[in-house]
Image 1 (tube, rainbow, N blue to C red):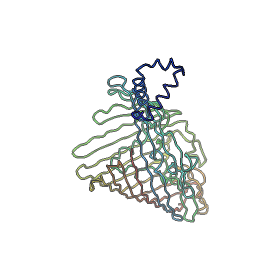
Image 2 (tube, helix red, strand yellow):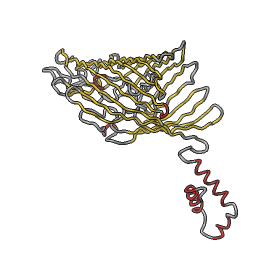
Image 3 (spheres, one colour):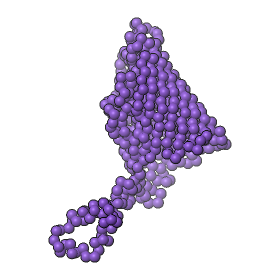
Image 4 (tube, one colour):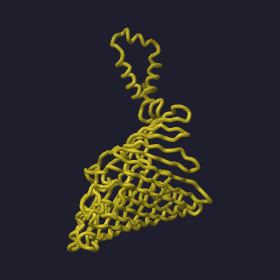
Length: 437
């Protein structure tokens, strides 16, 4: 029993449960009891979560990411502690696969996200600990992905279930600078904060003022195909209920001492069920069917570590009018100055336009006779610039960052009168870390 410990006790108990209490049954074990016990223990160990069963592997991975954020909206300031935004939040992932035959595999992915104050749009001037509408309170779990796949070395991979569709984060993921998590074009941390009027009133949040920048960025139930990679090129396509479809193309390679990565995607969504603005005199209307195009590119000079990343996206109604667009650029230096790992210095700039006044509300009290209480009555333009530093710690599979961002918004009334709605700028400083496991 010293040899097998607790596992032997459990196995012995399971074996004993299948035997009768009679002495004749016990005698039937003969001299093979120890061999049977060892075989049963081996079977039990082979099915534990740490390694999967004998046919399908199991790997547990993920990361924990948390940060401290100071913010100032021109009237109020505070410090919050929380995560870094849904789809980037702390999570664990179960993955595995089995070999069907040489070159053919079947597998699965289950990714569970830890919800808290990091949930998208859940924190603002009034709420620091998350919102039940987006996952709730200080804790909770959300199944971000759950799908199976069949893969061929020569034909590609087919996946079915809740997963990232082909165009999910296409333009973001080409960023190879090491600063993708703390610095990207999605308003994860500040999107839920209300715009503050110069007289102290609040209206729509910054996410609405910017318009959609990650218009197809949440995993959905879908069927997806990914091609093999040929000469650095690959392609993906997916379809999902009710209804969307998208395609994406990617390239990554190295030429003349430069790392290069480019990706583009196009998606269409129909039968949408949200409110949007169309040119109909300012009345609230059912959202039009939409199409979204995005492209991102990254280039890095290997010898010096100098890099440049840029992205562009545009959302349009399939009937014709533009809804919103954005462009984003980031430049910096990735250099190994310390044995700890690479240090990344960067600066960033973003310009986002809500061309159709998508959902702008609640700023009418800022200026007499100016009304932004209904969609399509105002348009907005948001500018953001920031700087930051990331320190990678290779020995701990960890990144630490400190960054600063400044946002300003121009809101323009198009309905009651022609005029600008004055708003306060927004400043934030965040310091945090991500550790992989």
